[in-house]
Length: 171
Image 1 (cartoon, rainbow, N blue to C red):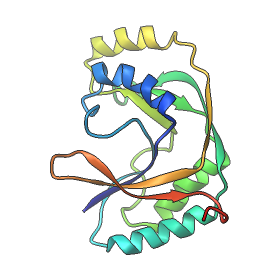
Image 2 (cartoon, rainbow, N blue to C red):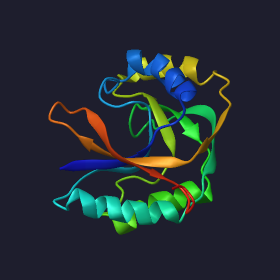
Image 3 (cartoon, helix red, strand yellow):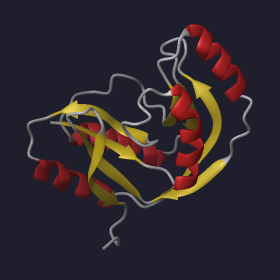
């Protein structure tokens, strides 16, 4: 089965991201706006083993402040446009622990915390869309207190398998 580890931001940020995604992201209908902690991976590992490991990871972290401060792009590698999240020790460590303690090998790209708002654009589309979106003055902050194990369905959409609250006192 194919799994991933993601953070879903607040409804406010998701609504803002979706206002662009519905026009510029072909994955709009497959998964809500999210920040990826561990990209999609296949495993034969029993889901209970995954959730046990993720529960252990979640207890090692306290809720943290997520700051989104600009629109950026992965161009020239891909024509993906995103809300750039300010990296912090908690995000980096969570990302690292998900790769270190779960199956799926090493990340295929350096960790750049972000929420995708446009992807798979032609070069001309990317240039036009990025030119206008990077002028957006986006300043968003929120407290993140959970992350999610998601799995891919047969129609390629993603669904939450389980949610993990950060901190030891989350019961």
